[in-house]
Length: 91
Image (cartoon, rainbow, N blue to C red; front, top):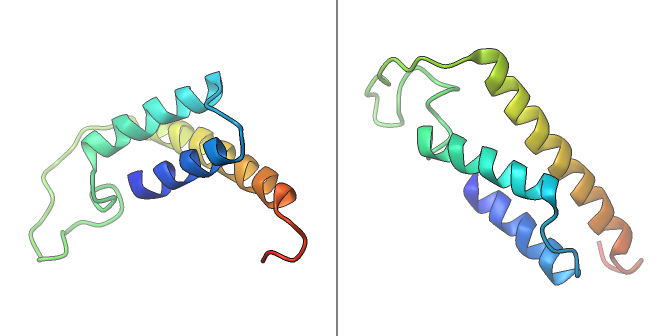
């Protein structure tokens, strides 16, 4: 998750769009999620890639959904904006 987020932030910086308040908020959400689930597997699967079960984690599902909504909304809007800025001959 962090690699994708960092790539988006880098592309926005290269396009001349530095971090805004909402982007900084989403970065905090991403960092918080990454601390709890660095491989992006814990909340999606009952076991790790080596078969070990994940320990029980108490989370507020509604808050997790809200966090993902904010991050994906920001990422999608940023991606759309960057696509509009790309030259027409660039895929």
